[in-house]
Length: 242
Image (cartoon, helix red, strand yellow):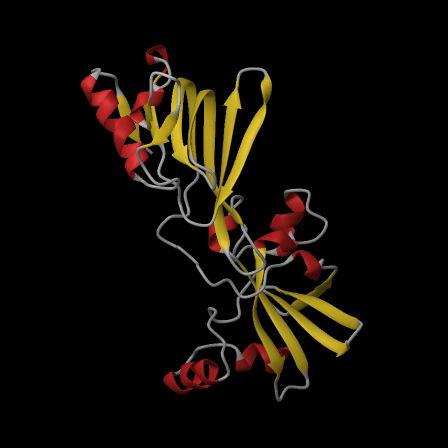
């Protein structure tokens, strides 16, 4: 039997539905599990003729069970409530089953929205950060150091690619649309007081009398944020790293 097993990615589980029954999802007004928070933890052919066989195979009850699952490339937790089993009848025909506390229930599932096996789980940092107020936020993006006046921001885990998690930074700027940036690794965010104004260009450039600018740092040097930190210290400006 050819199958794929999907499990919820903890870092994306904002509504805490992992290990919860299907009835709980329905109480949140989900007609079907949200495929975007699932990853395909295993795909292959197994010696099984029923869902009960699959359940027995993918449970790490004994050490020999664990060794067998490791040998076939299964790195997830024991098959549990909220997991989804796809039974592949043909290349264009599949059935999906939600693992309940007792048995399985057939469901609809948008497998094209699920992630492949995630390469960079970071269970130590699943928390989303939110801050409201008026402040400047300084960070490095793919272009250069950016400093923006904000009325709030949020940083949360997100899907970065089909097999990697990242971080989504959303900045609010008054009534203007949010500014959104995504990063593969967690960005260093320096927050400082809004009444101080932006850091002067002289922090980053040597400026000639004719106005010619010569950068003092390579484009993506983390020293640029350290220069802003030093400027805040010298000006006695409140700042903190998020």
